[in-house]
Length: 194
Image 1 (cartoon, one colour):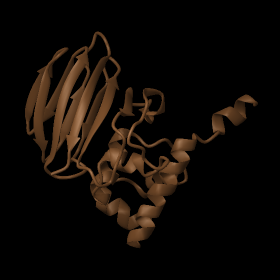
Image 2 (cartoon, one colour):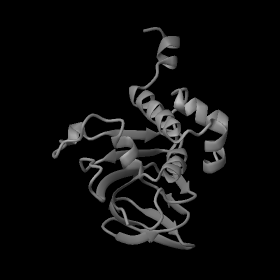
Image 3 (cartoon, helix red, strand yellow):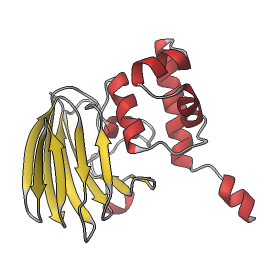
């Protein structure tokens, strides 16, 4: 494959995700303009994400999940194959926001009928991700740091977590995850729908 072709090749996950985002908007009968108003994301960015011209960031997906009433794991599970009861480590879907320095692995097998899920997060040293709202108001989160240090801000309170620490909270408003370094952080996020 030539370099230009490699640069323009669409990631299969981005293509499936873009198609699902377009389908969710169409199911509601919304124009790009209506979705832009509801999400606070520009029409141009929404259009490019739906056409898989860009890989959506964690922040963008969070805004869209809020509009569509889904967690990010639920949305990502909709673009995967039929969920199984057991997912081996090698088969767990991984999604990366290269811009933000964030890698997200869906650990637990997704299932629309269940309220809880496990996610492994990795933030590179210095990475800082802010979410303006939870995908579902009142979402319960348990954040357990496996390696490194993580700063979590929620409800105007900052929590500094080190290896082994666990923070439990209910999310109603903006949150922020930051890896102060010097090393990357790896953590488990347990999410429970209200």
